[in-house]
Image (tube, rainbow, N blue to C red):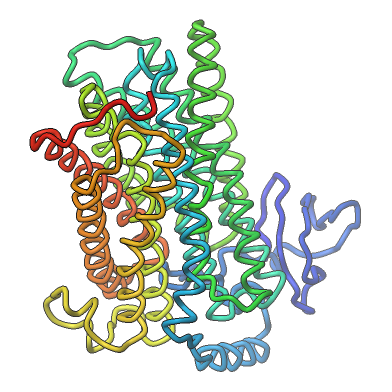
Length: 512
């Protein structure tokens, strides 16, 4: 599809009625002709079509429909419709509870050890000068770690649905979709990183009543740079996971979202600590300002690339509500973490915060992705299955023999054994400031189990509600759910540590 422009652009096309065959081409328009990498293809302006297709792309279409990519003639469009109908009858991948549990287990453990590593890193860097003197950095932590839920997991969920419904079978459609979504993700990461810094400055300024411009500039540059670099690295990893899952026959809904988070927390936190401390050592504000300006100036480039694909263009305009709202929700969790860490008696919360937040977010993201895929297979936008109609009640999520019921049961059963493994891993590494007493373990596991129970219930209600309202849950639900996971996890963990301190289960010598 082509659009007239005075600047270069790239297109994908394969229509025999036009000179452009299926290929990635960079076009340089001139009057009456199009130069394609030095090859001139004659055409008239009447033949140029908008790359937006018919302009009726909707959010519940997870991929770019066939007819809008290729620009077929009327008879070819009929053939595409027939192929689309055949794809619609494709059966949803069937799997036993055991097969599902085994597929989830390995990436779940991998993601869990990633969050443990992130917790250990946070436990170390909390003693660095930048973190001790600019405590607002702790407010940034949940918001930036939440980017994996806002962006990486959302990308994983969209691509997983695309694989399962057969929209990534064509190499051209696959790479067109991947390029557009990666560019979109970089735009969102840069903007969210900046807004997270603004939120951290405001939330830090309100209770203390003092504002330092040098700290604000450092927070902005650290946040934007961390969000951009971490998002780019994790985006490449995520694409590799999705493509690899498709080739090996593994259901990407089971593995993509936890693997997206496996090293996401560790990578993000390490980059944040390194950049923050580096900019803190170079105390000149103009250095931080230049770093922030550099990454912000790249945003228009990513917007141009993202706007070339109708699916990512749609989200470029309509996909901001969930990620921005999720960022502010996570920032509230960050404020709770900041105030809790400030109390020396509750210092042990730091090492466990990424673990409980990450595990809860990973599990609910799997469930959200699976429900969304189920709806794409069995329902039309605006309509929900009979079992999802009426008022919501928790038994609807866990009681039953359907695919989504079984997955909710399996995910809830993974909470306690998973957290036990991660708790003992932290204890063996002699990190943190709290010993694993029986009382501590009971209170911690109860908080973790309650967090995941609430998240699975919220996911069931939220995904069906969004589908009923015509929104694609793959793009809208996971940011909210992972942000709520951060808020619930941090709040429940803070309450647990306060409770342990009150009843006298205190130990602050471990890992000092």
